[in-house]
Amino acid sequence: MTDTNPARPVREEDAFDVDAVADWLGLGPIREVRQFSGGASNLTYLLRYAPDGDAQGRDLILRRPPAGQKAKGAHDMGREFRIQSALAPVFPYVAGMVAFCDDTSVIGSEFYVMDRVAGHIPRRELGLDLPPEDVRRLCANFLDLLVDLHGVDPAAAGLAELGRGEGYVARQVGGWSARYRKARTRNVGSFEKVMRWLDANQPADRRTCLIHNDFRLDNVVLDPEEPTRPIALLDWEMATLGDPLMDLGGALAYWVQADDGRAFRAFRRQPSDAPGMLTRKEVVDHYCASTGLSVSDEEWAFYEVFGLFRLAVIVQQIYYRYFHKQTTNPAFRHYWLANIMLEMRCRRIIRRAERGRR
Image 1 (cartoon, rainbow, N blue to C red):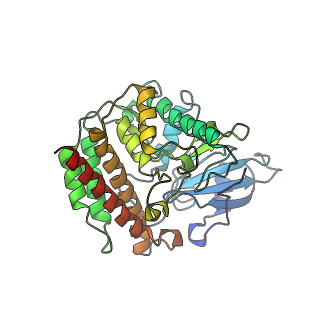
Image 2 (cartoon, rainbow, N blue to C red):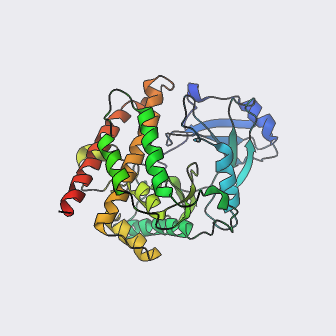
Image 3 (cartoon, rainbow, N blue to C red):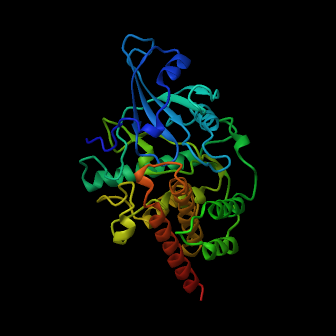
């Protein structure tokens, strides 16, 4: 098993007062802090404790927002902490929460700390020596994790207040369209045709359930003893109550398969093209068979386009910070190219859907 995303030295612009965090937590001296580079939104750090403190060599994870302009309502550390705390008794795939800090004087922002879940996180490459049949089993187990999440009773988990009632699809189309227009820079397309099509073709909500909204292979931790089995789901920043097919569409926006074009595959961030992984169509079929929901190819076009558009907005919001020098992270330098490719892909799907209606 290869660790494809080891924690690295903390980037200078992302550093914080380690002693202040140690004093606030009260678990003794922090021996070392390192940073995970996989995320492109919130910042994630590994805290390694000295063996002689109250934490006795324990490894913890700290999450905090990035610097620079942020979308309204985004990067809410308290919300992310509360969701996972509430889920723990009914959904055993969340890390243990340790503490939430709303005192911005400690490190300049809110943050929370959680237990580190030991296991393997797939990144761009799978990092596991598995035959295709085991990769397929891993993929099916990964999808079943989403099915299980969508089956959680929000009221039983104390999360009913996350929902805003009917109209989720409409709110998402309008909200993400507004975010894109606000974050657009001069070197990317307008997405206006895509936004008009989404507005004109949006379906009614199928049903309302707890959705993750960032469901990807690189947000799961795999059992180190049985690596086809997920043991934790990470990154709950965008979790809410909404339409499950919107969640699936958002997940598949990241799903780059082996027969995709070379340019699209260049931006792959998870090993969805590994031999044995399900195709996008097989993913939809597996999910529908497991949940009892059904969706035609014509209906699915909306969810697919919306997922890709939403990803383009997320990419653009991150690139906006780089464009305006609010971050110097070189990983964001070419995100504008991903934006352009996503718009082209949306338009291809729209053209195909319109031909199918003739």
